[in-house]
Length: 415
Image 1 (cartoon, rainbow, N blue to C red):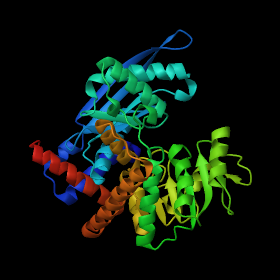
Image 2 (cartoon, rainbow, N blue to C red):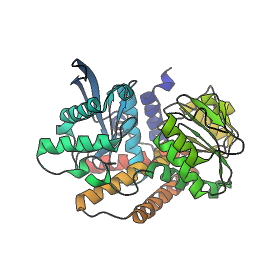
Image 3 (tube, rainbow, N blue to C red):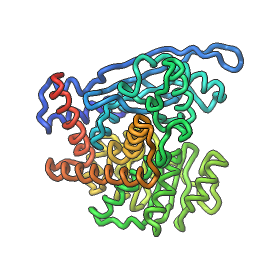
Image 4 (cartoon, rainbow, N blue to C red):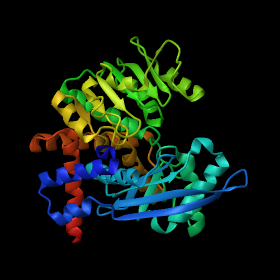
């Protein structure tokens, strides 16, 4: 279905925002397509001695405001359109947070769950060799994404530095601290989400100490489970799901114990004291706060009528389709859109770039304070756009981001 193609969704969002902003045709035409796209094949000798060919991508969507910034995914279902969409959303995300960065994204079509550590390292290094000419601290700065992590970034940074024969720690972010990573990065995406939920609860009169549910229990889902209960000590986590199924407990799930169980068992299913439920039913529970933290298009026209949460904080990329957005708005459900809600990660990645460039590193309280200031200001800027333009929250966030990128394009004389 066309509406479920992530890139089609992105382009529709841009066209809608451009119309409200009254952008000229040339500017709109520039913004609905990536500036640069790289596609390449990567031959890797596997542990069994056979050569396997992988397909890799890197897309730099727009660099008018600064170097491209965005993650690298290792995923078996990766497509060029998904990466285009994610690169576009990163462009608006950095602009909404008013960071001096553009947006990019990369990926390799592979299943890392079926690969050894040696194969993953070889693939990571080969990927960097393919894109080395197109990235750099002043060109494009990648980070981890689905099925990649700080170790992946350390391998990639090392390969890049071996090619250039010089230290460039800021070329990849979310690295281990021993090789140029920053304090406060591990939980930055979730922390940013908790900050904007705090602001939303104040503004919309929702009790932050009520119930919450999490769809998706990878890094972001696990960390928001812990941080939400830290931010709001009286709150109760009642449901969680991962790719294998969901669990529910009206009495509440212990976030610390649940994270330990997930790391040991590889799933939340079977957690002691919880009832197993269908995976997707987690989205439809009557909770105060819902965190979609999995993949795209989770909330759509098929299930949107059953959504009951008061606030939806999107820690995943593109978890709500455009049609569902409109229905949620009419239902009075406040959505904190992904390009704002999950921007804590790229914000602290930007802090990491600044620290790597200066070779001076901040302590964790400083990182947390600066992140709180950035997220809080961005949340209220989007709220102002909602009121001024009389639009739903996602469109308001798009308007803020697109207006800033369009202005940079015009100032540069591109359009």
